[in-house]
Image (cartoon, rainbow, N blue to C red):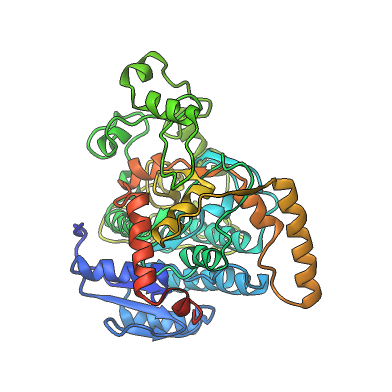
Length: 486
């Protein structure tokens, strides 16, 4: 993938981490000449690096000015199972600091790494798309902090010439992974691969690292393209046919089909026995004639339908909104059209980039067919039964356990409760919790049609191949012994 947006100066925040480093490598590989990183520590020395705290506004502003950044890719985030105060400081305060510094220094583009967990309310997520709201109550501090950070980023879109987008990857794994694959390796080292909680009929989404990287670079390119032209040209008109600008899913996915309970792909199954009903469902899924005879009837809105797009139009919601100040924008003579934000300054000026500025209503229209101001779920597009993924990882590591000890979810929740109380009494973080039990028994997969049709995203590496590559890297780089130091 080569850039068609001209030379840019990229600052990858969190550039020493798993995702950030992978993005840096991809940018260098495609020939970008100006790439820098910002992180607490410097682990690599092939690009300029700035070490410091992202909650320090003066420091972040200095970095943006010295580097001449035009595109920020913000991937920095603490790992799971830390104190809520750490998540709030890094994810919320840090992101707000970055956004304010970007606005103050006229950086045109910001790509934010959010999380699919920002919509997790402790319920089953089946074919969930971007219209699912943030929950009233979050199940954990990490996802709550990511949701707050995402709100900050998206509310900043259109302010002081800054365009923003948020990507919501699910379960990132692959070369460089120090959490997901090492976690499965620890289970194998403890001879616990025969344990299973629940019935293993819940589908789960994961994403190979290269696919997440690809989505970030696509998003940055789209923002750069939009920053060079008026806002009213950012998206295809709602009533226009889908032509060259945005294609149907079939343009990237040959013969796309919607899985149903009667006809669905088998997916990776590892060494487990495959039920006759699963074989029959897989057979029907491959049968074109059957699919034609039994067309799928949608039970949800099509996220690309006229009705769904109307739900994205915040002009109707905020058309009467006016800023506290009656001052007019010096560039276009209109009042600030953006609704007040609890996080960001109300006074907004637009940066003229040599193009005619659109009427503010165009900026206010958050159309689902545009990239700026939007959130996108990013996955492999291959939801898999939860325990099947682990067994594929263990198989790639050489484990061929076939016996199973299945614990009902109710029993797992009791054990999780006891583990939490014991850990509290001992004053340490619990390794086994009710939340983790719930995850192993929950459906959690997402609709990525919006990313496919608006970003042009398509997974580049399949799940099984990704597992092979991820496990190989893990074993080649010291396995669990190396992970202990991270």
